[in-house]
View 1: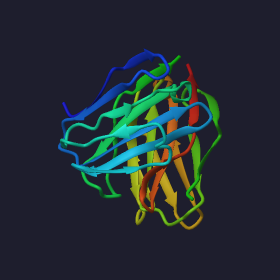
View 2 (view 1 turned 90 degrees about the vertical axis):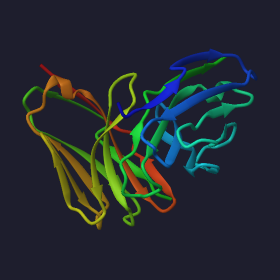
View 3 (view 1 turned 180 degrees about the vertical axis):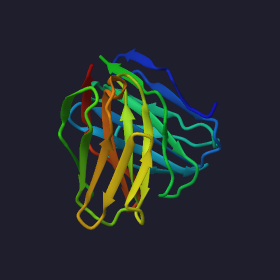
View 4 (view 1 turned 45 degrees about the horizontal axis):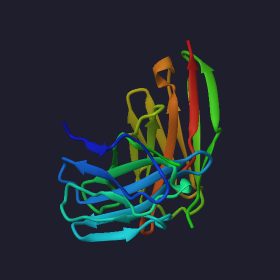
Length: 114
Length: 111
């Protein structure tokens, strides 16, 4: 089944404790991205990647890192999480860095930083 | 900077009604517009993708229209059902940012 998977789905952590949220797609998509969703603010892009070893900042990259060493995986890294990073995170992918393509979303990761 | 607005923020209708959700965007130089559905606690599911050169797309009971020059799109849902209850998000692609989202319309269809 074609899908985007994220792990973990739920995470509670404390300020300053490094964490990684994994994202994997099995559709051989070139383009992947991370979004966060907050009440009243909607979905905002954090980082995106047009292909392996190519990443770029989205609208709200501060406090986050990403890497794209393989086509299928695009982990989101919070080196020193803070309470303002409490949010619902979504990973998405599409076939090409082509603006005509549909994006497929993962199920989301709900993060609480205490 | 592209901004996307969705009206209304919430809508409640009785089952069987036809309804229209609205989306507007500030920069008409878009590449495409997508409508997504989001169920509580779940990810986003793409419903319809309209290319910039198209005027509308249809899928089952859903019809999405696009008027690029006026910066507007509508999502028409025919014969609404309780299973249509969800948040509907509109997103546009323009410039170097692939998707800019509206804040969504939360739809409740009452049986």
